[in-house]
Amino acid sequence: MRQTFDETTDPSFGAKHLPLVRAKMAEQGLDGFLVPHEDEHQNEYLPEANDRLAWLTGFTGSAGAGVVMQDRAAVFTDGRYTVQVKAQVDAGHFELRDLVEGGVPTYLEQVPKGAVIGYDPRLHSPDALATLRRAAAKAGAELKPVQANPVDLAWGDERPAQPTAPVVPHPERYSGESSASKRARIGEAVAKAGADAAVLTAPASIAWLFNVRGGDVIRTPLPLAQAIVESDGRARLFLDPAKVTNELPGWLGDAVQLEAPEALPSSLEVLSGRRVLIDPAQSSAWYLDRLEEAGATVVRGMDPCTLPRATKNAVEIEGSRQAHIRDGAALARFLHWVDTVAQIELPDERTVVEALERFREETGALKDLSFDTIAGVGPNGALPHYRPVTRTIRRMEPGSLLLVDGGGQYLDGTTDVTRTMAIGEPSADQRRMFTLVLKGHIAMATVRFPAGTTGHQLDALARLPMWMAGLDYDHGTGHGVGSYLGVHEGPQRIAKAVNTQPLLPGMIVSNEPGYYREGHWGIRIETLQVVTPAKTIPGGERPMHGFEQLTFAPLDRRLIDVDLLTAAERAYVDAYHAETLAKVGPLLDGEVKAWLEAQCRPL
Image 1 (cartoon, rainbow, N blue to C red):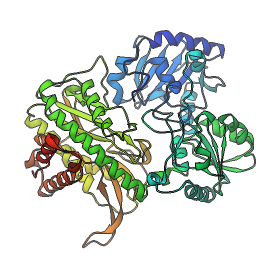
Image 2 (cartoon, rainbow, N blue to C red):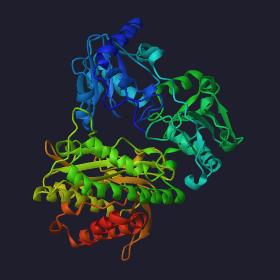
Image 3 (cartoon, rainbow, N blue to C red):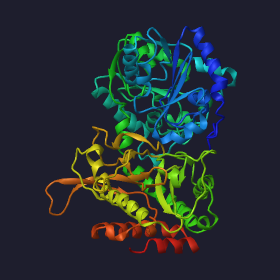
Image 4 (tube, rainbow, N blue to C red):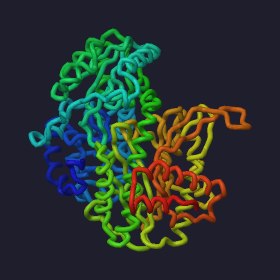
């Protein structure tokens, strides 16, 4: 289950690989080259063969970018990876820069006038590319597409083969709707958008539409593939024959034509004269270029699978409930271990990560983690998305806090949960800060809102208790989550940044306010919740949506300052713990069940 590129990747990668890439750049007349983290499918998590940034630099995070010039180079990461990038990348060969503040566009604005900067059109979305072009133009530089990627050429025969994990059916007992029904719906959406066909390049859309799952991407059960869907629901699925299992053709049916990926370019050409829907935010510029060259009329619009995939049906929601109960039992065993064995042995962060993974594996249902587990002790917990890397691993110590954020991939659902635990006796300050975070978490869990409300409009509710104390946190409050798909799924989001997508019934989002005291410790409380259908509240005049809690794992009672909670907030915690005991308790026995009963008693 662990990544092939280990998080302790040799920092000398840059010294070894930069000269090789620069030589290939020179052969193409390039002064620079852009190396995004994203691959041809705009994936967050990548197969090893597509992790070009990791091969070039040693950095293995899930978000980043690189720029290679003939005389210098830079790696860009966000605040989640401040520690990791320093441990993995040789700062003598790469300047370490912020991905968000300025990022690659600002860097391009400073390249020499007349510089020719290459890019692989298969790796950049048109929207992102437009921003980069404007930045290069400010410097008087040129962005030039390449036919052959210099990184791939430099990697050469050592580059791993593309993954060929078998693509398997995802039965209707998990999906809740047949592929034929989905394709009919998507065909109607394509026609409504004024198009004759749609090109789908997002692996999550492929997996959802055809009711299949794969194993090409770590942490997410995706098949790497593309599809062309007609307005009548017929489809062509471009899939490596090595991935096609004996049962797959029959599962897909006669209305789906299987073809090899090599047939995709010619299949785009035959769309000449037709109106073709494509999502410029999810599909690379290469697709739009090929369609326009073929004489097709490009209709830019959201991937038609995005919203139907995000709004889970009743079967998927029930599957998520069951996955979270199963996962909750694993979490209870883990939290019991932290509260007993670990409090005595004081293990390091890597041991904590391995323990949580072990408890999830013991469910017998875990297919993979949903992301690399985050476990931060003390100052490392103050880095919101810290991962234990060799140079920074800390041991648990009395008086500190342990923040653990992890999740699992199960056939019936995807989980993601964060709990913060006291090591030894917490201080009054730690209890106060934890309780402020808890108050914001409760506000988001209990809110009611009318149809049309966006996550952007709700975000301040989770921050208000902290704002009143002069505090805040620098990440979003909630992200969408898939159904045995990606742990990060759009278009819904709860964050300060403006998001125009309303929260719709069936959408699953996280609720994860936090607080981070640099150099000391961090706090985050995260559960997943699903948007409920609108109903009229007694005495109310308008139907309101709300959230149903999906995650059930006890909070650390020692960190709750009950005096800071209102009566309604105390009632919420008691009710949440009672429901946790009722749902998870039957899966436990012995010491762990007794421990859970004690943790879930009323405040």
